[in-house]
Image: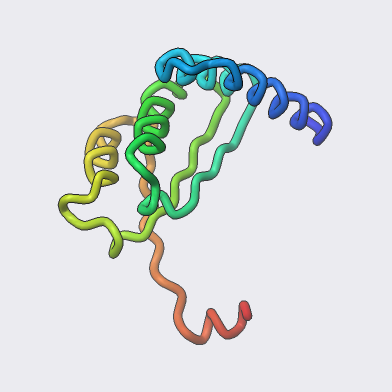
Length: 116
């Protein structure tokens, strides 16, 4: 898919969501649009996400198995305590055969210096 086709998919997604005040209708519209285009959706620093965002991510993660969509969530383990709302979502998704968790080590100070 070239960039112009991808931009068209993004515009369709925005248009589909714009008129939905009802949360469940908006979630379903989002799912339908994501299933219509091969998509990689990356959400970084999910440990800072509010509960509404976590609800959307959980909804999508449970239903995207039938779509050509890859959902990537990043978060910092040391920011997610026992009572953190993300902990519930991670627990719910842990049993899914479609979910892969990759624990990455922190960058060393030397590695950070090389990047900066």
